[in-house]
Length: 459
Ligand code: ADP
Ligand code: MG
Image (cartoon, rainbow, N blue to C red):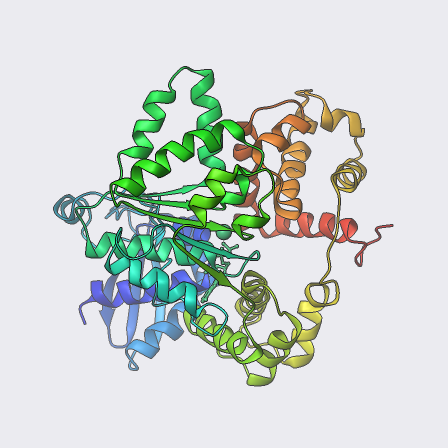
């Protein structure tokens, strides 16, 4: 292996064990500058990165290096002024441009394709199939080979965190691979709805519709958001018909069946039901263990089966929560350099597992945040711009989204009469900060504990 290939393999593994933000921050512009007598020197951009990598990641990096080449004994970091930049987060360019722009392999895992809106991390290879989702998976797979003519539309439905988005995006990605000439577009329904609202306001509805119509495969996630949005339903109805008539594939997902979507026009409901409907259920115990095992592989951690079975028997109905549990254990391992045992696991996952039926309300969130930051509730709700209010209000927006799954327009309206873009901005900003700053994560967890009457007080 050349030094470059070796480092690429290290990075490819590391990105599964660190957050995306950390990865982008600390591993950008790194490379192996020397490999000699079992010693590796990694060049980094500045002394800050050097210190961070040396303190937090050197043992992980060394372990991965050794798995790849057993004769490697040590790793050191060296600041070099030279910048061999490789693109981290950027839009996809043509293959040639990509190669010219970057001396190393592109990090496609981090790229959300600007044209298709698809995240290449979601694929069929890392999608575990069991009885609970095999119909949906098989239908999606068939469509990816034969778009437009197999089932149109495909309507996938199932509860939160059970893999709808993953499956839809995997289908889009595979279609993209097999039919590079086709224009594929992934749109969350919520974004379509706000697009309709916005473009009506700006008198650009024609342009907006053309953009949606000008694709060959339309993938729309979470169409339960159409409920009650009459204008959006009307616009979508026409788009749907055009697609259907020209045998262009439509793939839809929803958290419930078409029948159960409230205030959905009959004509749209019957369109949704007109192709193939496949539901995703809840994975059984063995499948939950298999999912955990696969995720352990991705994250480079080996856990006793006792631990995996403990998680699988306590978290039953949400794959995202299974991942969340695993992430806590991975985090523990990173900090302590050893795997947690079963006792530690139980402690680490305590509040995930013992409060499975989390319930909160808008009122409770506002109350808790104003109490936590010592503000008046009114200040959060009105549009004051005082500096000390801005951040708590953003946190409130984030929690409304995370805990209650409120729509962005509604969040904006309720908190300071802002529009949905302010809410989206706030939620993205807070999510990013949580990922990057562990003490901020703690702060948010404290608020959550209060919200759910956990360890630290709460009523
Ligand atoms: P939904 O859209 O149904 O709420 P997601 O597709 O966002 O759920 O899935 C939640 C998380 O669980 C994602 O990280 C996804 O990759 C993972 N996941 C869901 N289903 C599977 C599966 N069958 N195999 C592997 N990972 C899965
Ligand atoms: Mg989803």
